[in-house]
Length: 171
Image (cartoon, rainbow, N blue to C red; front, top):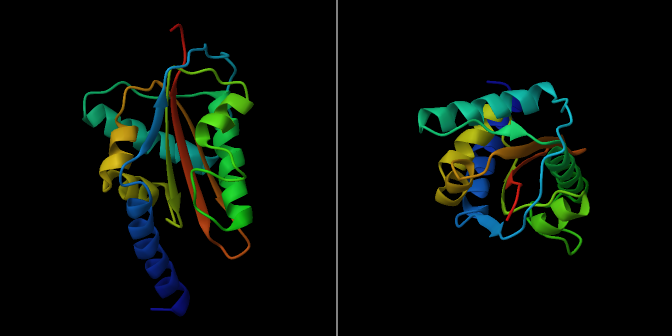
């Protein structure tokens, strides 16, 4: 096996372990309301794959599929890029929580949760990391109807994945 493949395998193993440890309890916040914008969302190929994989798991568990929301997509993409730029996996960067970030882009919510992962190589690998962690799994299979998802890669090839789950609407 070439050295590059070994590095990829080690990254996946460490990334899966780190993601599982990073969110063992999950992060979520409830209590705000709002409404979707109805805008069309353009997904990258990897975002589309992650959405399809996530929705397949939700369907397998008898849950409704998630719809991408433009404001959650914007917040997820910004956070993935910021984590990649800083080389840091965290729900709180620059003094802002995920709730702060979604509010900043104008998403008004009644329920909100976030999954993040460091260095899975593919959407399937990221999903497997989250499903192996009780906190991630609870967020992924939670009551939300909308999602923002993203992946960003930094100069060292490290990949930062984000899923933000939200429910907007009347209180």
